[in-house]
Length: 599
Image 1 (spheres, rainbow, N blue to C red):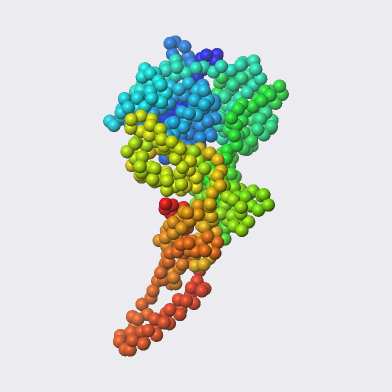
Image 2: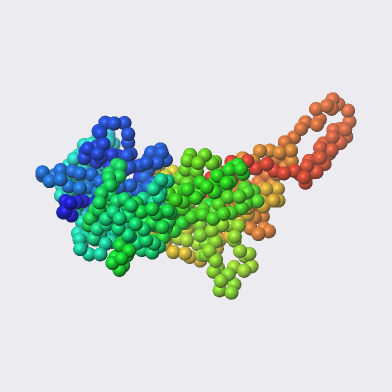
C-alpha cells in the first residue's frame, strides 16, 4: 500500500488513564475483534498486566479503517506506561509519526503524561490531544481541555473527547488520526533501514522481532544484519502484526511488521537496533540505540534450597524474554545460592519475582535493593559496587559517588508544603517550581536514587492524598558520604540484610530495620540482640526478650532464698543456651527488611 494511506501512531498516557481500554475499542471499531465479547486488554498478554492494570511489554497491531471511501492502514504501536520501562516507550515513539496524547478527564495531566509528551516532541511526533473518561460523574472535561491548551497551545477544536469504556467518540478519533497525523515519508529506493521496537522469545520459533521499515524493503529469504551485534540471519518468515501473525512476502517502506529469522537469544535482537541487508545494506544505524542499563540491584534466592537448579533454568528462560534483565550467580551465608540481579526499577523487580512464582512455581526471597555506587580507591582505581557485600574496606576509599535522578512531581498546589518536606527529608535539591495552571504545580528536584527506590512513591501518595504523580530519569553520579550498614543477629553478621545508605540516615534506617526484625523474629528461650553497625561501631539496637518458664510454680512458700536459688539456676541455664543457641530467622524477616520505614 502507498505510504500516504498508512498511519503509524502510538498512545501515550499516565498509568491508568485508559490506554489499554482505548486500544480495545480501536480493535472493535476496526472489526479486528467482535464487540461485546468478554475480554479486555487485548494487547496485554501477561496475566500480571491484566491484574495490575498496566502495560509491561509493548505490543503492536495493524488495523484497517475506511475514511471518505478510502481504506487506510493504522499501525498502533502500544507502549508501556510506567517509568521503569521508559526506554521501550522511547523506541516505540521512534517508530511512529504521530501520538494520541490521552488525558484522564477526572485527573488531568500527570507527571508520566508530561514525560512521554516531551519524549514524543523530541522525536518530532505530531500530537493528537484526547480527553478520556468523559462519562465519569466526577469528570471535569473543561479543566482537562484547559490544561492541554496551556501545555500544547492547542485549540479546543483540535482536542478529541472520548470515553474508551463506552466507545463514545472512538470512531471520530480514528477519523482524526487519519486527518491530523502525518503519513510516513521514507525513501523507497534507499538502502534498507528498519528499527527494532520490540522482541520476544517463542520457544518453537526463536526470537520474533517487531520492526518499522524506514527506508527500502525486506523480503522473505533475504539475508539481514543486526547493527549492534553485527550478526547475520536469513528471514524465515515476515509479515504484518494482526492479533495473530499474518505472513507476507515482503514489508515495504513505512510499514510495521514482524520478522522470524532463527535468532536464538533476545539479547542478539536488542530493542532500538537497526536491521539492514547483509550485503549492500545501509552504512549507518538509525539514531537512539541504547543498552538497557539496570538502576536497582537485588539478590534473588529460592526459599527452598532444592529449588536452586530450577531457578537457574527459570532465570535463563526469563532472560530470553526480557533482555533488560541482568544477573550473575551469588552465594550468601544466610540464604545459600542464588543470583545478583539488575533491574530497571522496583516495579521490574516485583514483576520478575511474580513471574518466577507464577510461571515457574519457584517462591523466592529478594534481598534489600541497592543501586550502583562508584567508589574511588587509593591508587586512582575506580570500582562499581552493586552489592553491599562487595563494599571495600573504608581505609582504602577516597570518595564514593551515588546516582542522582532528575525528578518531576506534579501535585495540586495545596499539597506543595507536604511534598517539599518529604523531598527535603529524602535529600532532594529543589531546582524550580512551575505552575501548570491555577491548580497544579510541577516541582523539579535532583534526588538520590537510593532515596526513591524504597517507599518514596508510597509516601508521596500518602502526603498528597493520592493526587501527586512522579517521574524521574537518570542525571549523573555525585560524590556523597555513604556508608555500609551491617545487621547483626546475636553478634552474627547477616550478609543478606546489609545495605548502603547516606551517613546521616544510617542511624534511623538501622533502628527501623532492627525494630522491624524484632517484630518478625519469634522469641527464643534466650534474649536476642538485633544490632546495626558501621564497621565495629554499633549505631542501633533492638532486643527480643526470652521466653520464660515459670520455675517458681512449684514453690508454695518457704524462705525467699529458695525462690532466688531457682531463678539464679534458670539465669545460668539461659546464659549457656545463648552461647550455643542458633537463632531461627524466618523468610518473612528478609521481606520485612525491604519494607522497613526509611524516613
